[in-house]
Image (tube, rainbow, N blue to C red; front, side):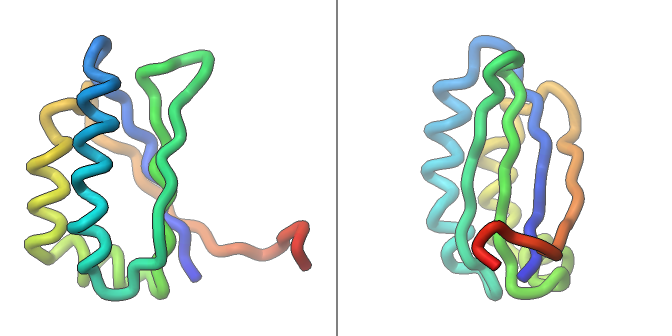
Length: 100
């Protein structure tokens, strides 16, 4: 399982609208190959900074399948106008968990 972690800096004052747009995007993510859920976290010290954590079966499910799909276009169409700067994205895989 791969976790995509995207840091999203949002234009000040648009937080509620951004969160509503991400909620609408659930459908686009749900149709995507290899998608296993996401969480959206909002910063406390910096409330315009969000972290979107998306679970994918494989790296390619995100980088190839999702990014090359209409689902990605739908996602960007819903949320892109709220970005104050381009998202920073990285991928991780779990190597240790407290559940182990």
